[in-house]
Image: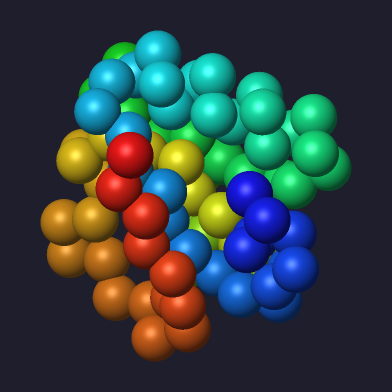
Length: 84
């Protein structure tokens, strides 16, 4: 979280192994005032599409996701990618 807090203009993806980890990490980010969206197979198609578009169109800088996210994503300004 330190990197994200000190590089608030950077965009990136944080991959987690489970849906539960995704949701817990997003809560932790929110508690640190870091805006993010989540993406996993348990979301509706509409929710996943909204999260993807928010990231691609720079409405949010951080996506917390399972490996369901990333197939075919083309974002040139993605500066970090973590896998937990």
